[in-house]
Image (cartoon, rainbow, N blue to C red; front, top):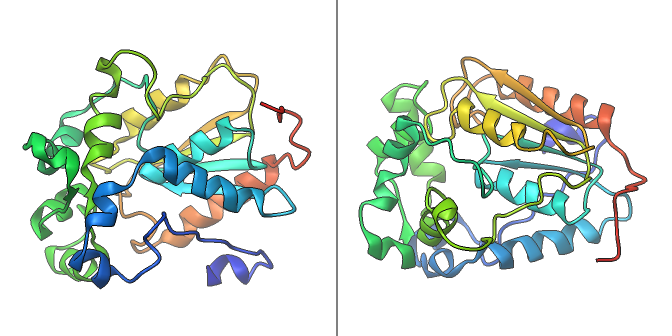
Length: 252
């Protein structure tokens, strides 16, 4: 926030519903994580976006990238940037490193109804693999919380094998705000192949869709050393492509 605010921007960082507490509180009582739904989260974030007079740039990391795509699909925002994005429904690329990273959630079907946490070793592989074990341990202790197991089971690897559209479905052919995919070349949990495939699914949309890869960066790219380059690239692209008039908005 200070990095972008120093450039004269107003920055909003809304929490997911119920996540407005500290890391320690979410670890102590993770039920709010286990109960969270994708639709409730998108509705909450949409209310924040709609509260801003000027259509904002929307930036999301990991599953936040999926949520950003869902918000743009609603006609919100002037531009969107997704960083190491989890895929929307229809993206069928599942590299081995991704399956290994998500195994802690997938190894037990009961995790559908739980908040699933990574051990320090699992976190190091999935998130911070370009850092030392000691550096990763410090990050895990400060920031790591569980993830909704339901999101992984119902809207992750298995969403494409269920009948009908799921909560992470978007119309890839529709018009919407310009969208940039940023991927990390050494990301294990959301590798470049996943992000490239997701971006290519928009090839029939009239909207701008771009892709950029930072070859040496992992999934912790927003916090790892050199994050400023990622932030500045996202910002400059978004400001260059933002369309505040939002001609794609409908009354739907």
